[in-house]
Image 1 (spheres, helix red, strand yellow):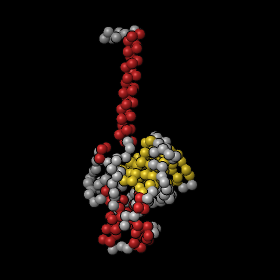
Image 2 (cartoon, helix red, strand yellow; image 1 turned 180 degrees about the vertical axis):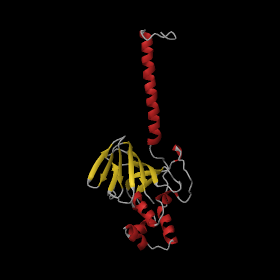
Image 3 (cartoon, one colour; image 1 turned 30 degrees about the horizontal axis):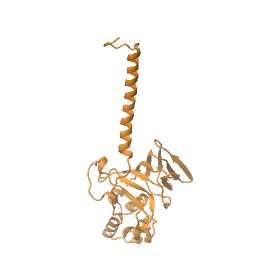
Image 4 (cartoon, rainbow, N blue to C red; image 1 turned 135 degrees about the vertical axis):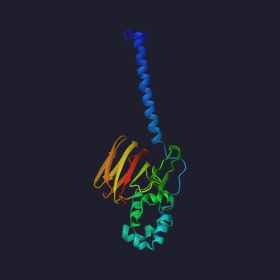
Length: 233
């Protein structure tokens, strides 16, 4: 017996059981709060990322033609023109190709010119960028939030990505670098080369971006993932 507490007493044993259960639920509540903080739905306010305007400004500053960029990226001149005039919103893989062709990091086209030795993104201050086809006629099925805007000389681009059932489907992407994806909620479908994989919460995948790939939600359930894109440039 210690401090008047007798573990053999059924009343004390019952109190110990309730305390243990309460402690377990407390830990579960903390875990749920943490997951909610990183897995909540995308912010209500979508923002326009003027990728095309920035691409055009850099291209013209360097006296490069659309044909020059086309040769460096294997993207058609018509597609490049659509990106620059804002009628086409490029997927992240295309932004990476454009950044390499213009000798810049892809983050420049998403975050702008402000560079810092570090960056902090508060939970309530994230902005989401939604993906549509030309003139926003159809939703491609994902929105993404940059988790490292403005960091100087970064080689990794971390994003929180929301995958929704798409009205239309993008082609598989290929570009330099590597990608790491961790599934937070829902079921993610990964088409990698000739293989198709389904990943559920807690699953992760790491692959070379040079392999033709496509990431989408599986079925009609919204999926949330943490994606980190790495490139040497």
